[in-house]
Structure formats: C-alpha cells, structure tokens
Image (cartoon, rainbow, N blue to C red; front, side):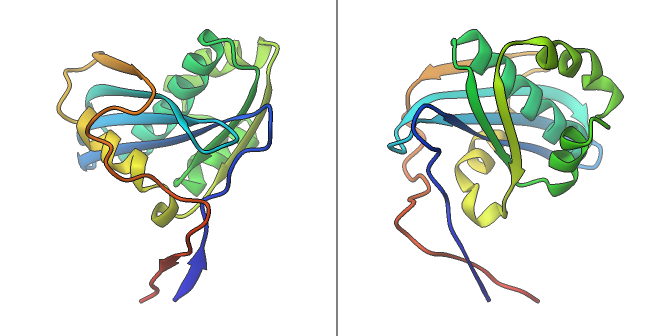
Length: 167
C-alpha cells in the first residue's frame, strides 16, 4: 500500500486535472477537465463526448481540451495533472497522438506557462467521475460549468492521505 496526495497548485496557477474514459478499447469514450485554484476551489468543470475512441486517445484529448479551455478563460499559468503517465510523457516529449497534433502545436504557440504531470488515479477521482459523464454525451458534445457542478459531491482534499493498493 502506498500513500498518495492531491496537491494544490501554487498561487497564480490553475490546476487542471484531466481524464479520459473508454468503455472498451476502443469503445464509447468521453473526457473531462476540472479546474481548481490555489485554494482548491473548483472554478470550472468541462466534459465532452468522443463517440468511439481508445483510452489513450481519450486521455490525450482531455489534455488538449483542458488546456484550450483554460486559455479561453484567460488563464496563463496552467498545471495539467492526468492519471495517464503515458499521455503526460507524450506531451512532455512532444510526441503526441497524431489526432491532437494540430491543437497541441497551436497551444505551444500561445503565451502560457504550462506544466504537465501525472499522478495516480486515487488522487484524480473527480475527473474519473466526470469523464464517465462524458461517456453519455454524443461525439463532439461538450458541457461547461462555472465552478462545481451539482453531481460532484466529493473532491480531492489536499489535507487527506489517499492510498494506492498494490497487487
């Protein structure tokens, strides 16, 4: 058993936790991004439907959609945290999935400060819940909430210890 934690972003940063979900691989898929400020307050929630996609595709799309929406909101110091280590590494090394390449190239031209990391799903459960809501949306359909939507009854708490159980 390993301890894990959800960390607050530093002042001035917006933390964007992202996740993609696919029922099957490939299968019906959705994505989510949850935006929190340095106090841990949810300041935005964004979900989308993908139709049929792989898990990795959903994870990659969640990252670019999450960043794109943050830029639209005027946020320029962005910390993306995903539970997909493979997707995080792809963006860190500029070896992204071809389906998101054009959007990623536009993001890189924007005037933002960007950090991309990965963490365990035990500290990314809010976006897992939201991505599963995205599964119910039609391909290309997106929903945005300013703040925390009513279906988010629990969120990660930076003052709690979470546990990853190993097999």
